[in-house]
Image (cartoon, rainbow, N blue to C red; front, side, top):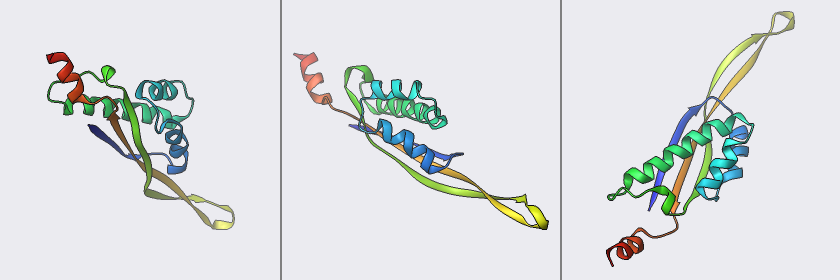
Length: 126
């Protein structure tokens, strides 16, 4: 089973966020959380919160309220899309103006378990 979490309109360029997301894609959830917690980039703060949200979504999606620690969760899909840009102007020499683009991005995480839920339910019933 998989669960998805999306974070929209992050005030950061998609290129900077992709560098962080590429680092944790395909990793186990506990390892990815450690990598994000101890990384110094700003995108890791946003990504850590999003990963915790994806884990909570996975736990809420289960009917029997399984814990995420028992099921070997992996971050199977992680991608960053560019969002809208806020366009601002800054004064320049000789009475001109330069355009400043404040970029935004959208981040999507998909978390999936590697141990099947049906196997563990059968084992507990036997």
